[in-house]
Image: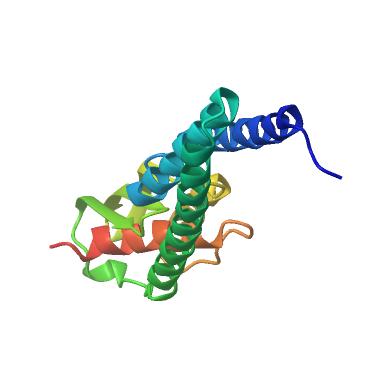
Length: 187
């Protein structure tokens, strides 16, 4: 059964609306993910909008060109997203957290950070009488790892860095622990 021009425009308009809503929903992730992901996504959103526009005004030749460009942009966006995710996961997997001998750390306040693109942590660690007395999380950029922030209390309580990760926030836990280690290893 052949679709009418109106039905095709409704389908294209619906696709554009869904893509636009998805694009807008990712705005809150800016700063969490590499910019190239958003650049490729928004090119895909814009070309989808062009497809919708050319379907309305009836420019079939330009419509075909923009459909091809749009499909290509979504492929590029998908590949970019997959590659960035793989690089991020490799960075997390390559983090090695070791306990620092607190008895060798002088009293003072130490700042440290760790950044694996999707997750970033910056901490301030206070050491007094060779004990961690406070860990302040100055910055924690994450997507779903906010629950990992309570790990700093466990580190102070147990007087060590390599405490158990917070379940459901493993990657954020690792990044926060590495930031604390980096702070204490600064001389």
